[in-house]
Structures are given as C-alpha cells and as structure tokens.
Image (cartoon, rainbow, N blue to C red; front, side):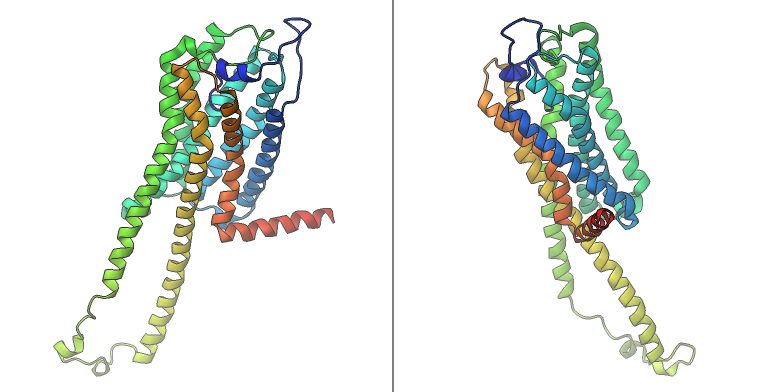
Length: 357
C-alpha cells in the first residue's frame, strides 16, 4: 500500500490470546489476494522486462518510460508485497525495526515511484502533442533516462526524511504491534506528501489525457483542411519552360522512378512513426483509466483518515485489493496497446516453452 499508517493496520490486527508479546499468524482472504497479486505482478512485469531486454527494436526513447514503470512495479512486488503480506497475517511485526523501516521505504518511496513513472508517461505524451517540434529535436533516450533518474531523486528527497525521522525518533515497540509509520508525529509532512505525491498523479494523468485528446482532435482537423486546399499552379504555364526542353536533368521516367522510391521510403517511415505514436497514446489512455480506478479509492480513504478517526474496514479491504492489482494491469495494458510487443511476447513464450520440451 502507499501509506502505512496505524489506522489501516488496526483493521486486520489479530491479537494473541496467550501473551502480549507472542506472535500469532492467520491467513486472511486479504492476505491471500495480496499473494496472488504479487505472483501475477512478478510474472507479468518480469516477462515484459525480458522482452524489452532481448528485443532491441523496442528500445525507443518513449519505451524508456515503460521500462522505468516495469522496474518500479517489480521492486514493489519483490520488496514491498512480501512484507505487506507478513504485516497483514501477523499480530505484530516480528522481523524487527530495521525491516520495518525497509517496509516503510517500499510502501512510500517505491509506491511513489510507480506513481511518478505514470506521470512521466503522461507528461511525455503531453509534450509530444503540444510542442511536437521541440519534442522531436530535444527528446532522446538520454533525455528520457535523465528524466527517470530525476523522478527517483525527487521522490527520495521528499519522502526519505520523514521515514528516517520516524525510524530514529518515533518507532514504536514492534513486539506489541504491526509496522506502521506514526504520521501523527509528522502531521504536516504526512498531509503534504499525501496530497502532492499520492493524490496528484491521477489528476495530472487525467488532465494530460484530456489535453492530448483535444490537441490531437485539433491537429486532425487541420490535416483535413490541408487535404481540401486547391492544387498548386503549374509552373510550366507561368515560365513557358517545359521539362523536356532541358537536357541537364534526368529523363522524366528516371525522375519518376527515383522520386517514387524516395516517396515510398518516406511513406513507410511515416506509417511506422504514426503507428508508434498511436500506440503511445493508447498506452496513456489505458494507464490513466486503470490508475484512476485502482488508486483513487485507497488514496481518498487515506486522505480522509488524516483528518478523521473514523474507520472503514470493508471499504479499506476493497480499495486495498484494487490498489494491489494495479501493478498487474500495467504490463497487460502495454501488451494490449502494442501489436509489436504482442508479437515479441509470443515469440519469447514459444522460446521458453521450447526450452522445457
């Protein structure tokens, strides 16, 4: 989850009947669903990462952002989710304060990196459609990698101080309770990060998607207007010079052949670029829908509970399940939106099957 506060953990506290320091383990339906989401996330994100590693044609500047998102998803699934499951099924966090700090690091920083990766994709598409000339001249793999590294740096600068302060000054006895960050001791910081880091991504993605759709509609309208413009005036009629009167240039048949080949090559390149651009916009649309549906309920609950002591255990469990499966949906959205990726994934799956047969 993306905000490990005490009030959420109290929903699933299972206290021991024999001793306050004894640890009791109970597999709840919520923990089982978390386990399923973890397995699926590692499988789907891992398979797609392998495809990106082995297929050099997929290493485009835009796909750097997709790889960045896959890395964030895998880190959450490998580091955070197992600790989340332990924290869910145990009456107290028996792994100790250091591992609790690792859990908080994953729950805040790694989860925020997933949100940040989504924002980078949204901002990239907005840049491409609103300022296409500067985008084509400036954007590259190096720029994309620098932006991803900048995102990770920003998240650490904003979130790591609060985690370290909790570890040094406000950590409670792990033998008697679950692992959570006591946000009441850093209330201003908790409010700011909840609004800026965890609530804003959905808003930015929705605004970016709206901007992209509007700008593409305007651009398509301009293209239609250009198609109906009158044909250019014949230069021969003005100058009185016919191409056949000049012996310095290739014959018309030769020029037609050369121009036809050049036009065909340019046309193919434009078609490939247009398909690639269309796939990128489809990715943005699908990721925006999945993020809004899966993140908003839990983020709304966390925001509400900053200002209220009211508990909503049933709503929390439903929201937590949606949030857990968002990292499973990301790689599915990539595959659905890209025929080239589907082809490479099928090829990779056949290769894996042939190894075991």
